[in-house]
Image (cartoon, rainbow, N blue to C red):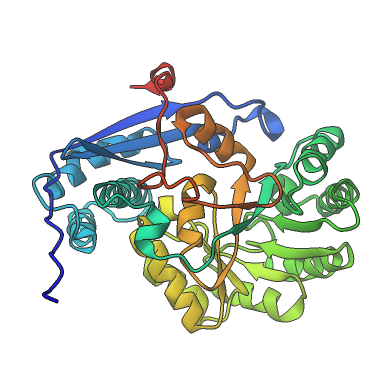
Length: 373
């Protein structure tokens, strides 16, 4: 038999960026709306009558980064060689600032490119990457500080009892970590609502000081908490390591990592038990998969951070997966704006099971009513 025919590359014809804002259901503590949960920048990359869709839960300003800095690095270049396109975009951002909005924008374009490539090859994204598992376990998350006990109880019971998701995460660290007793009260409310068999996770968003986080970690362990995310500032590797060594819940950080070097430092610094990585923040699937490999080399698991419907495909492709975060707010925004989203009921999803090419999601016809700018 002769050599198999090579795939013919297709040049990118056009890159579009749009910004959307979906109203949140209710404000957080102090009446401040959760703007990050309701904003989405969507990137559409077109080639050969196919459209790749990418997004990041980012403010509208990221759209200008895509249009002014990144689109020109992609248009008229072949879509199959995504690592080369990714490197061009990262170099373009270097002088302008690669973190923050730049990383958000690059991530959205990278997601769209992977979706487009899989569509052109007629494969689900997980099929293109190669599956390590048919099913992806998920945990539900929500319940920010400031919610009433009744509302928190309703959220946890809705996920664990009514929808059968056996793991749920709530936010703690109220008032910049100054209300420890209230944090523990809320944990107990969630613990009871989740039931005897429910697994409870918490996220402090870096609110505590080192010694305080150790003290809280021990109290959380007594309450049956198994996951303590960002107990201290996620850039404080020594603090994370101190918490990890002194407490029994898994210490997690990495969801706010903007690039591979930051995520690699968390692994090498023995600062975490599990590395949650956000493909809409770190550089898209290109970097997410590399981060998973780095974590595996250090004997660590990875988790998908936020943007749940996207991470399902990536998570199914790595052997060292812990789970994917099914963020209540992000899921609501994605379901509002996108067709083809997944249902996490039962505690797991099966990305690509319907055979749809790419990640299987596209903008809803009525999404324009949420468009801003």
